[in-house]
Amino acid sequence: MNFRALITLDLPNTFSEKKNLFYEELHAMQWYKIKNISTAWGVNFNEGFDRLSAVSTLKYDIKKAKYLSGIPKVSYAIQLANYHIETGFFD
Image 1 (cartoon, helix red, strand yellow):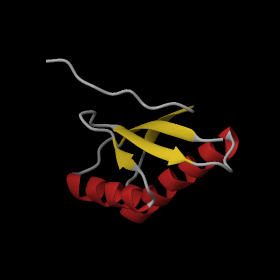
Image 2 (cartoon, rainbow, N blue to C red):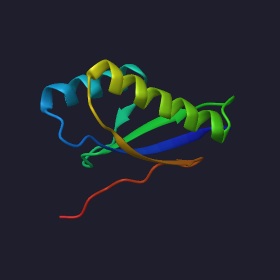
Image 3 (tube, helix red, strand yellow):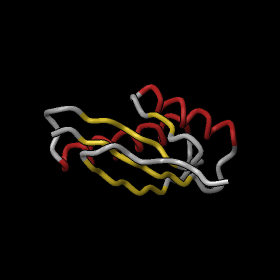
Image 4 (tube, rainbow, N blue to C red):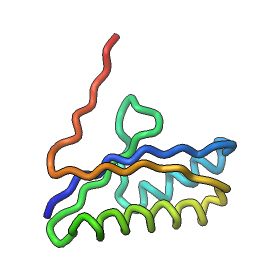
């Protein structure tokens, strides 16, 4: 099934240098930043993933980026759907 993941990340007590390394690792794993929302990321999954394997992959990616960047703690929320992630802003 095709999934679109919306992930929010909190990196408490982490300085910019390590955050940037963490974000670079996520980009390398095909994550993309959701525009205009500072803590939100997206990942697209194609056929061949079920919900459990998609969540497992996302958790693995987070752990790997945490380890490689040296960040002490990461909190996350994951939402999976098979439709487009709607974003926007109001002035």
